[in-house]
Length: 441
Image (tube, rainbow, N blue to C red; front, side, top):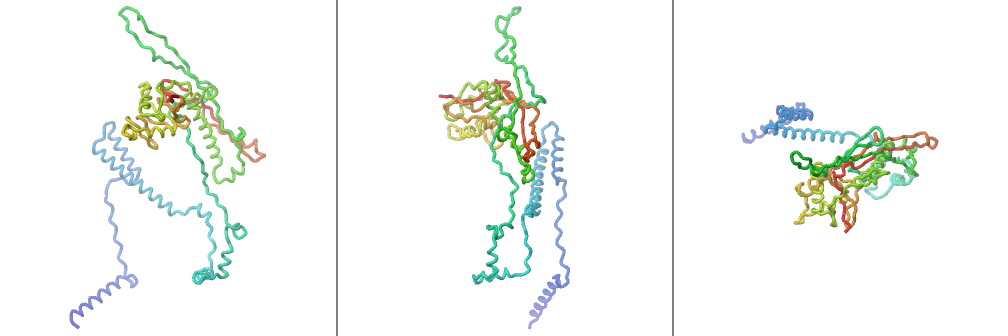
């Protein structure tokens, strides 16, 4: 054997010995894991409150002057850090939810006792190998959930704690008009005046004016208080059994209150638009000045919409809005320009629409399903345009009143619910908006 061969063997032995000494099983201490590098030092905020404080500090330091380029860049950098911190907190919250056992799931999951023998496992293994069933397999198959006597009685019924409610949109106009609340319901009156038809004149020196002039003519607007009520079957109070209140898996009382309130709101929404007055509120479309230029096409056209805007005095256009129902909005969204393109941009030239910011010719759109749908060859009033805040007022007396009566039907084990509200509405400035309608031709 050569000297080189001996050297190679010795080197291999030394390498193996060194490896054995490094193994914990031979008593060696494993090397400590590398310490991760410390995060870079800095004054960047690490919490949402810290970031918000620094954002506000930038605004406070600027005061009324415009932000400098450095301040604007610092503000935008902090905004990016805020989004990252919020995202990190959300991810950690989701991870905590994943790792937290669900009490509701634990309540309905039943864990059987652990088997101390493996007879069933061996029987099933034998069946897989040979296809032959033994007594254990036959006995197992004899029990089932579908047949009550075979084990179905032992399976509990679990109800999902959720009530599915069908939804239907109503209202919209009430959010755009003036609304006042009074403590009592006596008639509420205030004066009105329309002096827009009068103007001054020129008179020669030392002489009285030869023409013109008119006295001020006042009118009066009156609001009452109609009583709205949401009854149950047969126009009687809504009756709910005590058993249902005690045993239901959800809050029945809250459900009753919410549904009765929705019934009243749904009725009022139709009156704010189409109320006939006298025995109910006057609606937006009742007794008001109708747009002088009518719509004659099968669907609203771009020219008709522009004309409707300019039929309103410019004084009222600053706070003007459109209002109509969703079906009419669908027709308007399909309006095309001369090149067959939807009129989507810009807002002051056409239509922009979205789930939370809908504008038509630059003016916001209020969807209210109480309006009739646009239809050709009719004289229907299908919408309005103008300053509804100045043009219409809703008066409410206090708030909704829920009366719970557990006594009258106590012998039958029922609780009676009655909800009522007092309100009225009336146009207060008929020049502030125009009602849109079709031409019968």
